[in-house]
Length: 393
Ligand SMILES: *Cc1c(COP(=O)(O)O)cnc(C)c1O
Image 1: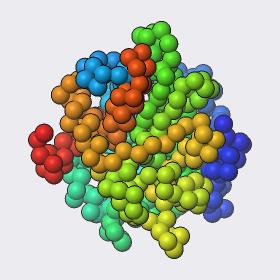
Image 2: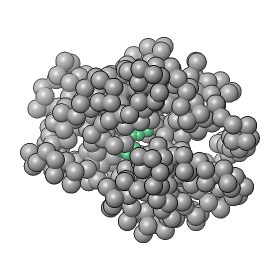
Image 3: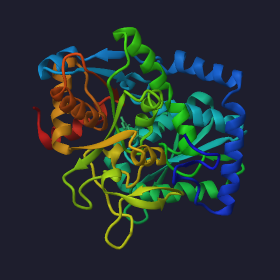
Image 4: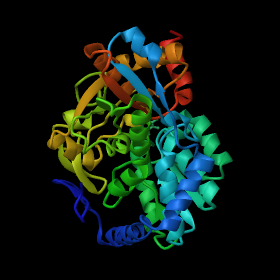
């Protein structure tokens, strides 16, 4: 899909300082060395099987499908990963790579704390130091995840510059990394950033699609007609899409957060509303204001509010291999409240966007139409917030 410089069509690549480029080249070289190495692959399989809880199952959402009365919905249960989401798939991979490169410390930023918790978990298990940068405001807002990270032995760096949220946390993590390239490794939380991260994180997440394809054939005797996943940076979506890209009959739907509406600042639908631009070292669709500055974004699901998107998604959109659709906060909440009642599964607010779109698709399709949804994470982290703001429905 990508060329040797990490370009997916015109998207991706690497737009960074010379010094950082030298580090990225080392990471790329090390990654190429281990990605087909039998010992490394076996170690990864072993960790997935005995620690992470893979393979995760596929659940036929029979009650939900019956209630809608059209297509059949199947859920790929990434919520059943250790730590409750797909993020551990790439965190384990990145920390293994850091270890292979002889690093003693991993550094990452976190917004809502999900990436931080998965990083702290992988680092604890693999015996590396872990430093997590987090905006001061987010630290106050996301207390349970801060406590989790601390219990897992991570060092939390409170960032009190600017807005004290994700953007400043990224800057702070980069600064810390730049001060110690020798011993540290920067772990990006999605299929974003300079080459080789979008490729590498995709490869680590591709286990979702590989398993799901085999499981769908085993359970139903056929490939799904459609695959649906939510898109923030795009790692869970590309992870499940990757196994189906060459099966042209399988429709791929990436679901972006429409938030409160289509005005700048009300959503985080980067493909729908973004323009070609460069952010965080790569080229993709970027949501900008009228002056061409990166605009503020919003979604009820904090894991989806990123003003850009992985370059491979921008490319799949440009060649029309995948379709990118939008679900707003209200539709997301309907799915969030319904799924637990009919299937006994509380979805993450991020994943509820994918479920909501699958429900729309099921309504328009017939009984033998199979819709595979990536249920990227569980919703325990969101319960307090949702019930406090929207009540018990
Ligand atoms: C972080 C997160 C996402 C968004 O990240 P992607 O890279 O777009 O997958 C989606 N779902 C859950 C549960 C998350 O924690």
